[in-house]
Image (tube, rainbow, N blue to C red; front, top):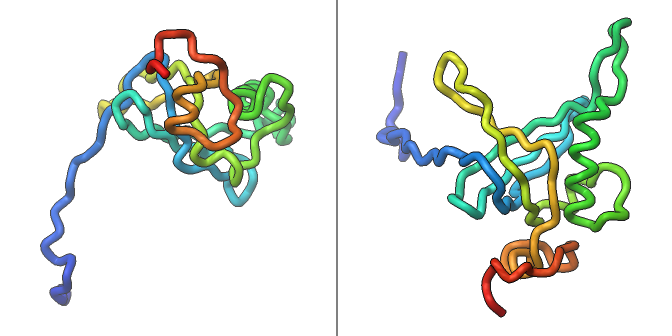
Length: 155
């Protein structure tokens, strides 16, 4: 088989993966989308704590005992908490993915137990609004925030 040289012929893989850390942290949404079949809500985040990338997939539907698709209320509840963290406590529904990229929220990141290959996966079950100083520095203009509690950067 022919291997024609080109500008990427000598490319070496670079391992720049930063493991997400468990615990409360501020995270910025870098990508948000709904799958083409509308079964999954996919989010990518960057941790403002250590620059780790987190990728999460929420199931919009579950299957009932008859094999029929029904709304997955637990995972949708988590996505409603994301919308409320970004838009305020009175927000309803799931956030439209096109509107939330760049916003910052607080999340308590949980890590799964390592699988047989040693990989761990992040999980987030609830989102909270970020303090004003964090939103002003990293979030979207007009995004909902809570007052700084004095532990963040001084103004």
